[in-house]
Image 1 (cartoon, rainbow, N blue to C red):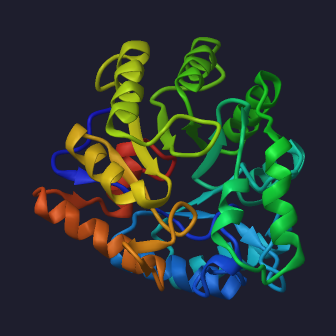
Image 2 (image 1 turned 120 degrees about the vertical axis):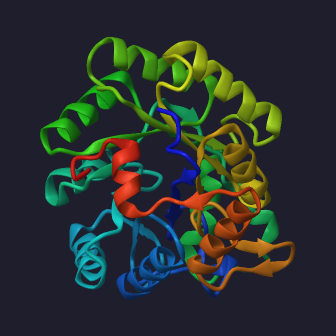
Amino acid sequence: MPAASNKRVISCAITGAIHLPSMTPYLPITPEQIVENALGAANAGAAIVHIHARNPETGQPSSDLNLYRRIVDGIRANNDDVVICITTGGGAGMSVEERLAVVPAFKPELASMNTGSMNWGMFPLANKLKEFQFPWEGQFLESSRDFVFQNTFKSMEAMCRIMDANGTKPELEAYDVGHLHNIAYLLQAGVVKPPITMQFVTGILGGIGSSPYDIITMHQTADRLFGKDSYNWSVIGAGKAEFPDATLALILGGHVRVGMEDNLYLSKGKLAKTNAEMVAKMARIMAELDLEPATPAEARRILSLRNAG
């Protein structure tokens, strides 16, 4: 669907499952830190907050539903308007069942859903660290050298059906051009229901790059497969590509995601201290382009979520 007038949706991914506590002292780890960052991001202009959980003692990605409950309840107790998008990507090594358990448990309006299997290489990040704060961190990175992130057609179909049964819209994460063709199959098979919302995830080793050429390739392929202006789309640029790629998405008519899941730096050499800082920077870029962040209510209408009025 075309973006409504000059409104663009900002999503903020609060902590993710890639970055390590050793990379920055500001990474939200505990439920309380994740809640605080989510509320700050919402106040700064994010219509959507994207949630992962972590072990509060070690920072390791977790599928513990009790941790998710503390996060969701903590956000809702202070902000009953912002859209909560819960991950079903989870973390490396989690089973599909573990990853998907959050949907029937919390029935979120929106949940991420990865749209294809891929090599997922995080091991180069180890070269940026002299030492690790926790033993699991080095093992976690090195294991990705021999890791395939599995998202088979069987698991994708099951995820879509369970989301549909719980009133949850899948946010379809496409890491490469082939994933767009997977979405086209799911749409043709009736497993995914229109209007679809997808996110181009760029810059992950094993997926498409994050240059302007890569984003335009994804956008043009989606136009060809789904029909121009017939779908909602957003862009993630990993690392230093975050703000340039988001800006290109805005110019092309798309929406954007920022946050510490995707990037730890506010600018070159300057670590972000909060997710709110990243959202505020994105909002400033929007203003320079005569665009405005969509409110949660506007985002619900744009994305056709279940609570859209």
